[in-house]
Amino acid sequence: LAQRNGVTLDYPSVEALRAAYAFTDLQSFLDIYYAGASVLLKEQDFFDMAWAYLERAAADNVVHAEVFFDPQTHTDRGVAMKTVIDGLYRACQDAQAKLGVSASLILCFLRHLSEAEAFATLEAALPLRDRFIGVGLDSGERGNPPEKFARVFARCGELGLHRVAHAGEEGPPACIEAALDVLHAERIDHGVRCLEDPALV
Image (cartoon, rainbow, N blue to C red; front, top):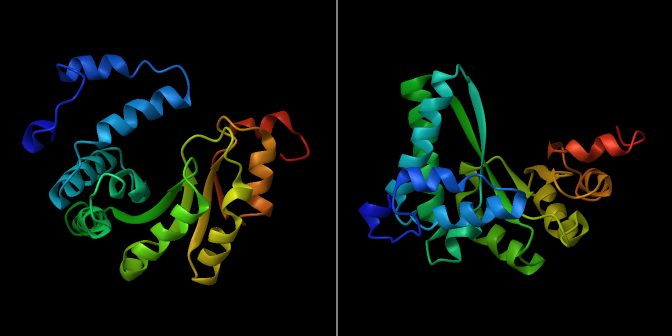
């Protein structure tokens, strides 16, 4: 994709990029993730990426996938919301028809960005509301508690969107509790640090 779109990466080869995936914490992973996302510019790029994932999912006997995507990662680079969602959605449709895998999309807000930016992202996505089933919250937890997004998640609930959240991946058990009690998340992603709080478990 980098070659196709004329994007220069900091890695001279696929092998070098794979070697860089020896990350030590969430932020070092996110640094590589955001660098990799820079190659996604056109609808076909988003389709190709999602299709590659869904083909692998089918090979692993997955029958249903709910796929997170971060539009802000791309819209902040000037890629249109419609470009992102249309490419992903088309891959989901093809997966059902050609692979027998049902797939739905969950739009995630980046928690290191502001509540106002999350609201703007939601508004930009609403014309394509029929193409995603819910919203999520991801990116670095440190300094970005769930409470920061209480109002936008309340609005999503009013719109009938499912609500999920990454919580307790690097953040403390209190982040999981807030995701459940403040955001009314129906599902917690990761949540591994719940084990530090028997009452939460």
